[in-house]
Length: 306
Figure 1 (spheres, rainbow, N blue to C red):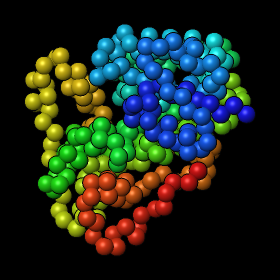
Figure 2 (cartoon, helix red, strand yellow):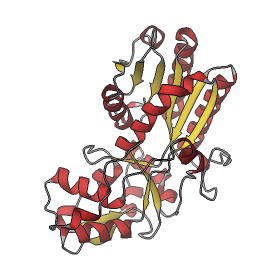
Figure 3 (tube, helix red, strand yellow):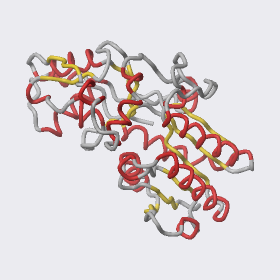
């Protein structure tokens, strides 16, 4: 059976992790090079994994529809199925737990762009194509410096501080990229046999900044304090700084406890165990070369098993 996948955005967080997981599972992985003919690149592929975003957060309103159009055209021409890593921006302030039946009531510019994008994939699936939206929370990966966890929240960990972008006790859902892309591979093995849309929530690992600080304190054997993110300075940042604009738009999510409904996910993967908070913390300490107090790792779970 064809085991070739074309990955768009392989240089990004999800794309690079997906490439590793597909290769580890024995798939032939092709990298799409931005600016080339996507329809030609997709010939012979069983799946197109679209993890491509505009460079440097630039011009989402114009570039996302263009990328989506290219993906749909390439899928029609090649017959390849489509997989997209989804996020929670489309739900806005709808009460969680969020699932495939939760209305899309985006409350930000970026959320509306993503909702419109997903509507086009839904219409594509209604044409008899196989489309998977694998939806998760904020990406985390100990080896990826560009995650929000590494780039902002743990920036001052060596100084004994963790940065909270919102309420320290707000419990938020995070998607460990090693876990999530293993799931993506499992779905790629079977989901193109049944045309239509699969909107599957990945429940991931849920924790608050306070719980994160307490676990770092436990494993490091020292007090870890919580400091507030300097939103005031960010609000004064130049409108031309697009990362600042992106963070400002998503600020509401850092104050809002939320979770992804795992009912459908666990029905498909009943033996799946996500990485625990203990495991997540240990991996982030290990990659930084920071010492863990002896025996503190005994309560950690083993690697995720599907």
